[in-house]
Length: 423
Image (cartoon, rainbow, N blue to C red; front, side, top):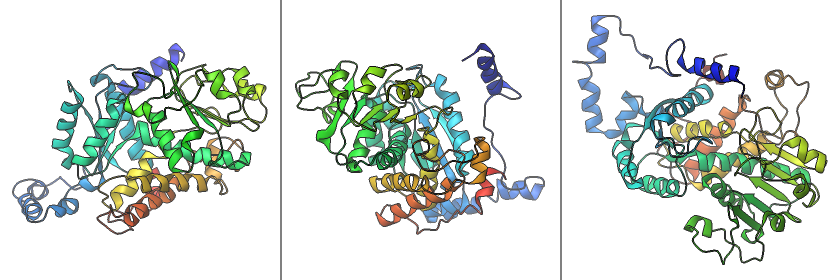
């Protein structure tokens, strides 16, 4: 980033008022009667109704369209463990995306907890405040235990987006990339560079989509995670292979797929040449990927390439997932976001990329045409159809899998896509 861009970013967050979100009134508050209805004595009436039937909280408060974005700041973006307070701009940013793309209100909560258990206890005690909880920027392996415990203890959906959002978008793009390459996910050899929260979630979801565990090789800083390795946590051990492979050179030879969730520049052009025909490379580290697309294409013109960057085609961007997943979950008052709902989101994203691209998307990207193919395997974040397609698929999956407390369509329908996008 240039010095000018850095200053622009600081000014954006500081001016004209600090922060990126504010609270707005949804009811009139101009007269004495308005205030009497909003607070004392009028507020006593919804209080009594909620005490009589807790489900009335969805009728008389904003809980049903409210998500908490919660972090301990232990894995902030690519910056590491900088503490809960430093995570606040990111959590506010997440709230901007919830509102911008799915009309969901949110509040950010930064928890200064000395242990994972203290974090779990803190969040569990206040979880009923919201309709859902988005966990964010929590380091592995603690994030797995934290999410699992909160799912068990909370009556609202809990979703760690660093895990599942990345996995859902990756899986959708991967299924389309393999279709273009003429390969089946059941047959391909997959190399995953990285063994953190996103990497493990990606591999788990690809297995749920049909990938065979014996065809997966995962690497961390020490090389291939293999069955003879000592001192690996239970989550890495889940993907330990009984193999003689030890290095990326060993693993990449003949591989069909490379997924990078690790660090910049870790995949070389020479290694790309070692891959199978029509290799699929998802180099998702930001801002500098494991290999830049132009380098990969020079080495292998037949490559199908995705990154996490917006200035290249096929951006793996979590905003394609989490706003619409929560929208669907909230709309049917789901008690959790389960595997069926994640897979529904995968296939909704995958299928949408096959459809004609709206003119508004072409104009946003200054393109004359975009169509399903090597440079368009994932919908773009500005595609307004995401709200309808992904949210509806997730909501219906919640109903079908028995975790919804309301039928679909939702109790809180958005009158139109334009209401969310401000058109």
